[in-house]
Every structure is written in C-alpha cells, then in structure tokens.
Amino acid sequence: MELETAQSVVYITSTAAIALVLVLLAIACLREVHWWPRRLTQSSRKGWRRPLWALTGPDEEASAPWAPGRAERLWIFFVAVLSQWLIVWTGHLLAGWSQSDFLARVWERFTTAGDAPHYLWLAENGYATSGEEAMYIVFYPLYPALIRALTGLLGGLENAYALCGMVISQVCFGLASVEMVRLAGRYLPRERVLTVLAAWLMYPFVFFCFGVYTEGLFMWLSLLTLRLLEERRWVAAGLAGMLAALCRTQGVALLFPAVLCWLRQPKGTRRQWSALALLCIPLGFGLYLLCNRLVCGDWFAYLAYQSAPPWYNTAHWIGENLATQLGVAVENPWLAGIIYIPQLVLYFVGLLAAAGLLLRRRALPVVLYSVAYLGMSYLHGWMISGGRYMLGCYVLFLSVGAVKRRWVRVPLLAAEFAALVYMATAYMQSQAIM
Image (tube, rainbow, N blue to C red; front, side, top):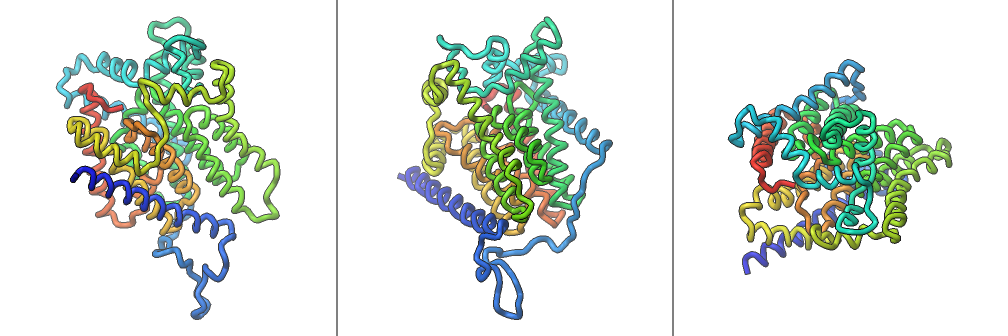
C-alpha cells in the first residue's frame, strides 16, 4: 500500500510539474512573438510594464554575447576530448582494473556493450529485410552510415568499424562542446559560460559520448541547429536539424524552436523561403520513415519492432512511466541507484531548470527544445537509458550557468563531478548502465 501511495504521488506531481512548465512556456512563447494580449503584460500603475507571468526578472548584469575565438574553440575541443579519456581512465582504476588492461577494457565496454554492436552491424551490413537482424530498423541511419563511410576511407584495418565509431563519437563530442559554449555565450557572460561548459563535461552520464553511441553526433547536430537558429541562418539550420532528425527521434523536437525563432522576427523581415528551409527538420524524420518503407514495406515498421523484445518500448503517459519506474526501483534495489532513481530525479530537475530559465527570461528557444526533448524521452514506456538521454536536455547546463552566486555554483559542480565518478566507475565494472 505504501508503494502504491508513493507511485500515486509521483504520478500526480510529475503530471502537475510538466503542466505548470508548459503553461509558463506557452505564455513566454506567445509573448515572444507578440501574440500575448498587451493588457496582460503591463500594469496601469505609473506606466510600469512587467509581465504578470514573470515572478522574477532577468539578470541585472549586462550579458553581451561572448563568441570564443578560433584558438579558444580549438582549446575547448581538445579539453572536452581529453576530459572523456580522463574520466574513463579514472573509472577504470577505481573499478579495480590494472593500468595495463586499460585499452582492452575500454574497447570491450565501449564497442561491445549496450547498443554499440547493433550500430556496428548496421554499419557493416545495412538494414536487413528479414531474419532476427530486421529489428535493427529501430535505429536511425545517419550514425551507422557515417561509420561505414569513414571505414571505407581507412581501408581494411582490423576492427575498423568499431574504431571509426569511437572516433566519430569523440570528435563530435568535442564539436558539441564548442557549440555548447558558443550557444551559451549568447545568453551568459564569459565566466558563467565556462560554468556551463564545466557542468556539461561533468554530467554523470557524459562518458556515453566516448563509445559507439549516437550521443556525440546528435548533441553536436542539435546544438549546432539551435545556434544557427539564433543567428537566423535558416538554410544551414534546416540542414543541420534534418541530420539530427536522421540521427534520433528527438531531432524532430528542433522544429519547435525553429518555428519560434522564425515567428519572433519582425513581420516585414519574414521570408517564405526561410520557412521552407526549416521544413527540412521534419524531412529528416520523413527520410527515416522512407527507410522503413523501402526495407520493411511499412512506413511505421519500427513501431512494431520497438514494442517487441528485447526493447518492449511503447509510449505511455509520463506520469504512468515514472510511477512504474519507482515500483521497479523498489523491486530491484541493485539497479535503483544507477538507473531508476537518477531518471526520476533528472525529470524533476530538468523541469525545475526549465522553469528557472523561463522566469529569468533566458534562452527561450533552448528551453522550448529542452522541454519538448524531455517530454519525448519520458514517453518511452520501458525507459532504462534516461540518464543518458537527458544529456540532450540542455537547460540542465544553462541553468547552472544562470546562477549568479559562485558559492552556489561550486557545490553544484562538485556534486555533479562526484556523481560522474561514481557512474563511470560502475560502468567500467560492467554494471547495467545503459
């Protein structure tokens, strides 16, 4: 009975939390595109204008955009890649393995565990029309296609596919880190942009960008799209968003900030061609559906395979999913600390971060994308990779940088780093972090 009560509380609070954030987000978006009634955005007292939805205003500090130079971007790239090696090395040693086994252990964990073998099989063989491998249609084509292309350039090296997969992931993570800094620099002063970078590099599940997973590639493409949208480079943003949607389902969520950025332009500057360019984003998902049609004869074949073993992945309401996760955490305490509890906590932390940025009137396109991304991720019925997925919820990192008090930011980063070391160690111990 106590568990059922706790699950009911989780269901209600998770539903109420996302409903509240969606209301705040809707009001902020309407106000941004000047569709919010004027009488609701100002007070009659002394002509003082203040949005009624804003419980707190923006920072008093001037936050002129900071754009890192070429040399700074190069440093950020190498620091990001090096940080990945350092945290994997630390996890390896704390897991009790010897230094001489490091490369062999890294190869095993990051090329043969989780979904890595599936991507490598697709890179080598392509989609299968029948047999057991036909279920790999659930994986999007861009990442394995890039692995195959790079492998073709390298020739017949042994284990070339796995090596190329790791190279692509790590290079893309470095590029994503640069884009994170460039995007954050549009909203925050330099010192706090570096805080955002630190929060990004120390995310407890960031090591998944090290191996044969789509995280590094998808983060780079989605962050690049968000920056290009802010710069009103519509064609480039549309193409980057299309590639993101060819990489993972959540790439389609980039359409929401794309529409917002287009609508908030003055009416006289809106161009039809720019709107057409942004339609490339859902076109990426359409190309994936076309793959389903050509390979399996059904535009939505992936849905049937997703709902079958070994994924059992069907969409359910977020509150129901989180309540189920709480129950599974109680039944499987050995997995609760590395899978289910982090997923529960990150859901509420993500919404809190989004609400905080909304109330501070910062980074609205990023908030809009992050909330859509979070919602799409937590609709998964059997969710076991929530910690990894939430790397794409960028409000988690911008919100740390938005904190003005250093004495608050430093403990947050310290706690995050401790969680990263714990998760990296558990992963290198072959625990079931996915």
